[in-house]
Amino acid sequence: MVPRAYRLQVPQGLYHVTAHGGLRRALFENNSERAEFLSLVAKVVALRNWSCRSYCLLTTHYHLLVNTPDGDLSAGLQHLNGRYAQWTNWCRGERGHLFRERFNSVLVESGSHAFESYRYIAMNPVRAGVVARPEDWRWSSYAALLGLAPAAAGLDVGGALSDFHLDEHAARARLASFVNDAL
Image 1 (tube, rainbow, N blue to C red):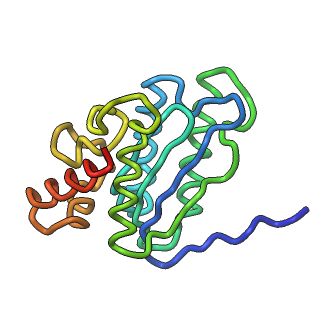
Image 2: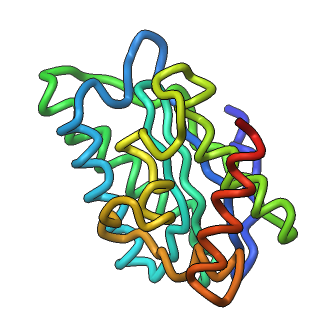
């Protein structure tokens, strides 16, 4: 048996994380499953002292942008994905792997890379054809970051906005302008 490849984890890092459902299995079949997943994200964020800066949940996959101060990304995501898979299998009366493979993570190494990550995550439901504008997707953090919707528990709105500007109003305007450039 070949061991898994080592995952780069730095003591403190911002990561763009994705995970996909297995073959012929949706990660999220309905809104109650999405709500449960976000509840689990909030618990892991609190338990690990992470900062969740952005997220987007689609039917087949999810995106998270998380800052991990202690280099524990793998442990936290193992907990998150494992608990969610157990809960989902129990609710659906199914067995087996929910996720296609382990999560994918990319270390965000610059401010411009962070900006692109926010835009990519916000635009995901638009590119998937489920909404015309990113702020219309209920299961994304984008509307909350713009102040158009309440923030989900565990979402670090202040941390996310500080990536764009120290002034909240200016940060929201800069984020909206950057994302709208993709439209």
